[in-house]
Image (cartoon, rainbow, N blue to C red; front, top):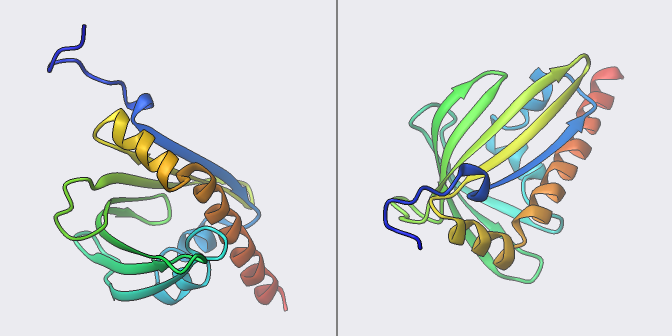
Length: 163
C-alpha cells in the first residue's frame, strides 16, 4: 500500500538519452551556448525553433517555441541553474516561467579522447509525469533524434574547421 511518504527512486522518474559525438568536448559544448547555434539543430527531426530570449548564464533564461512538423507550436522555458564549461549544464525546463510541471534537465559532456559522450537526463517530480512525457511527446525517441541532429551539426562544424 502506497503512502504519502513513499519515495519513488530517481531511476523511475527520469529519461536518459546518450550519444557519442565525433568531436572534441569544447566544440560540442559550444553548440549549446548560443541561440543561433541551437536553432540549427535543437529538437527532434523536422522541428524548428524561434527564440524570444536567450541568456546563457546561471540564472539566465532561454524562452523559445519549438515548431513541430505537424504545425503545432510547443512553448518552452528554460532557466539555467548551473553551467560548468565544458562539463555540464543544469536547467529547469517547463512550458513557461513558473510552470508547476517543470523538470530538471542535466546535460553532461564526457570527453573520450577526440570524441564526446553527451548525456541528457530529465528528472521529473513523479513517475506519472515521466511516463506522460515519454508517451504523449515521444520524449525518448525525440531525445535520440535531437542528439542525432547535434551530431550532424557538430560534424559540419568539424569539417569547416578542417578546411
